[in-house]
Length: 204
Image: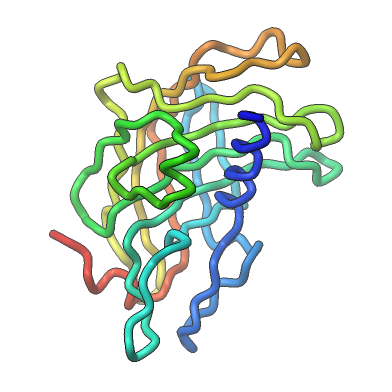
């Protein structure tokens, strides 16, 4: 049951929400950014990244969106375009300050949009891409887990950020007996195209 719940949440993480701003429309399922990092010292990157507002952000009377939090997610496919892994950081607050990723994966918090829980998740897909493999959540004992939104490029309409996080194995898979117990993402960077109005309410 836990795997089913996590799989559903993974699917939510990899969906991008629509914005009705005429200057930019973020279509569901269309990547709007890139992520790069070192994963256990090895280069890891994806051109299929999403940075979007959380599902329950507020719409104002003028039909403008006021994001309450953001989701950064990305994954990779094999040569047959089968999803093989996914990564996400959820409940990123609208702020330019460094934010500690201090909570392990919590489905109830994800489902209720509890923005007090800044969490990360990594998972693999095995077999024909329809079987959830190894699942990792935030290693809350690590003292250097963080994400920071650092700047917005008005010309390119892109937000840029950095991150670092260590995750530990929540659940393993007999199909991946050599999966490491921990994953450490260092030197993480990302950028994504978002409407400028999303950053107007950012805290300094």
